[in-house]
Length: 201
Length: 180
Image 1: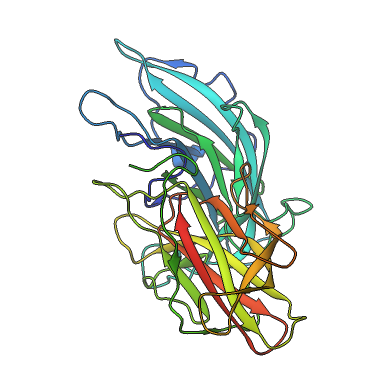
Image 2: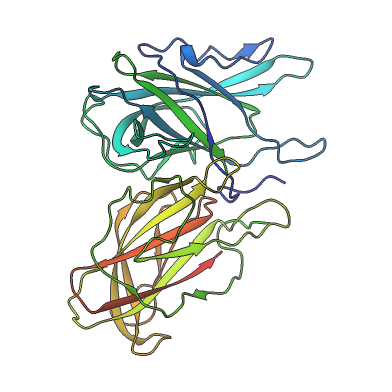
């Protein structure tokens, strides 16, 4: 059954990397309605994932809270950069198609804590975690609204490397079936990429 | 099933009385990520939060922590840092740890449960990066007597790491925890 705020001990899911940079392609109206669910397109910075049904049987439901954390692949000699983020929630429409809501716009700074898994498939040492996150637009369920966990104070700009650790963004997932996120690097340096990890709790 | 904030009448768990050396405190990214499976870090207490679901894996909303210990110098500056740890994917090999904050602990005059220890009577939040609101909340604090506790949202994490730190030698600290 669905759980109250942040109780389920779910694992993180890690998404692939995107090199998309520049202005957002999608705005608040982009996923208001569609005849079929959008498909993930990492080349365009578009991440799409289905929130697990924990309701069972004919009573689909999700956990209360969606957590998002961000990371980057940093090319050699890259200047500091960050990532701009927009998030939407989509629900299915009876008879086909979907309705979507725009949740938030946020930015994250790429920090200095590296991965350490060069022999594995998770976070090699050229990956770094985003240590600080903040939002500029919050159209989610308020209260409790968008919340940041474990975040450092945001640096003076994303043109400055952030600090240590890994920040998390949390929002009420409100029973939405799919989450769409658009990620755009703030730089254009060749080889840099960004991505996210997510879990519900 | 998991309860909403502060409803379960759970009992306290007192950490084993094997003293963990208290020294300088670690960087906040010390437990951000590991790819080699979880091993208890030296100089830290690791609290495995209980699964309270009949199926699946869930924990209580709120984690309560209280402390007791001893110090040879009454002016010791005693701190504890807290990290919440979750796993990646289907393997327990990869672990993510989010830094939640730092507390300053004040040893009082009330005897603790272990020999020669005193209860921590007051807790001050030095750095709060947990879920805000409700954030870290202090319950039962007093300048000199009794036992204070801190409560915060456990965020469905599987483990919580505590590392004590001090500016003096001769400090021994123990945590107690309960979910509610």
